[in-house]
Amino acid sequence: MADLAQRLALPVGLVVGLRLGCLSHALLTAESIAHRKLPWAGWVGNAIDPDMISRSENVTSLRARLPGPCLGIHSYQPTGVPVISASDWLALPE
Image (cartoon, rainbow, N blue to C red):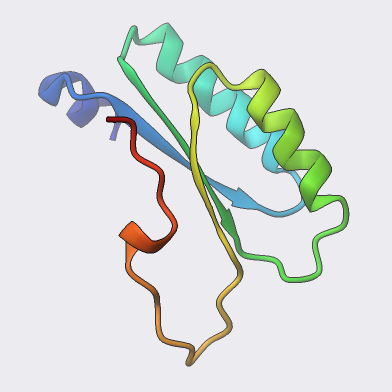
């Protein structure tokens, strides 16, 4: 996917799966984006573990340590629950 991002030269949006290990994964991915000198759009948190311990603390750390803005946090959606539209929860920069 990095090759595609480089060819398109569009800002990269990182989706962070909010679960155990998300800080390490997100920071390594952000480092890879920076290493390739790709433009950064921001990141979105996706709550995939309904029982994640310290979710709010992890989101606070991500906000402080990732180089782009948080564009939104998507709450956990159990299987069978209709997905809401992105415009209902995503805060895109104007």
